[in-house]
Each structure stands twice: as C-alpha cells, then as structure tokens.
Length: 227
Image (cartoon, rainbow, N blue to C red; front, side, top):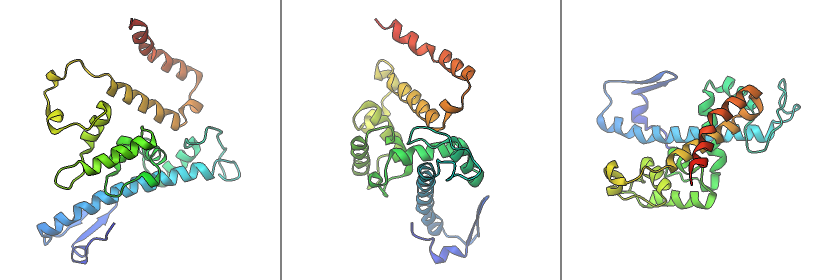
C-alpha cells in the first residue's frame, strides 16, 4: 500500500480512536485517502489471519507455548490457547480473530489477488481452491467501469452457480419462484465450520453438546419429512 501523500500527512492525525483532520483538507485530498483505507483494512485482515495460523502451526506443543497447556487437535484449526493469547495481545474479539484465521487458512497466499478486497476472498473461502480461483478471476474481470464485481453480487452468484446479471440482481423477489434453501444451508455449514475451528468441540461440556444436538434435531426432522 502506498503511503499517504506528504501533502496530506501534515493535515491528518491517525490515532487508536479515530482520524483527526484539519479544515484545510481539500476534496481531492479527502478522496485520495479512501483507497488506502480499504487496502489497509484488507491487508490487516490477512496479516492477522496469517499470524494466527502461524501460531497454530508452530506453537502447539507445551515447550513451544510457555505457560500454557497444549491442546491436541487436528491440524488446520487454531487452538483455543492460541486464540486466548491472540485475544490478550490484540484486543480483538474472538469472532473477528476466528474469521480472519478461517479466511487466511482457506485461501492460501498464491490464490489471493491484491486487486480484490478481503471480503471477496471471504466470499470464496468455503470453496475448493480451483473454484476459488475461478470466482476470484470472474469477480475481477466481470465488473463494470474497471471495478471488480461487488461482494454482494459475488456471494449471490456463488450460491446460484453462475455470475448473476444486473437484471437478475434486481429482480423482484416475488418473481424468483420457490425460496432457495442453499443460502441457509451454506450459513449453517459456515457457522459449524467456525465453531469447530474455534475449538468448541474440545471445550464444550457433554451438556452443551447434547443441547446443540437437540436444537439441530429440526434438520433431521426436515430430512425425515422429505419423501
């Protein structure tokens, strides 16, 4: 990311609680700051995600994680101890850290595209690598006016299975026929994936597991009612 131009640096101050700007900031200078903010947010999400995954890969054993007991678990999931340490060090909430790590793990660096936002990569994280590459390329090449496809359009297109046209995006809900169940299934699977990667399966008590099984019983009921 390019640094803020020198002409702007003496007119702004970035603090932990916000951005302070002088009245002398021109519209062009104000406008020029926006892309840098977007790039900084996208970069930060990937940086923190990669940092978490590195911690999981290198500091799982008791000797590598001083003062903490190692938690055994499948490779590819950031352990609860690593998350607890990351919470303490970054001040970010667990859900945010979990999402950053999930996207960083699911979308490896060679597949990432600097011209697309982190949200674009998050949209494809649930897919297989070859499908991720396909949709990311499509998002970059199929936008209008040189801009990538919006993340909303990308998410909906992935759900449907093809790149939606602008007309399809704005079509009246009443004209779409029977409600599509796929988005609900995808959200449920994404939720469960994040639960597993947060270490819930290891931390949860038998009572908590039984409660969750009972709550998810409605899924089995739907399956049984399908002839």
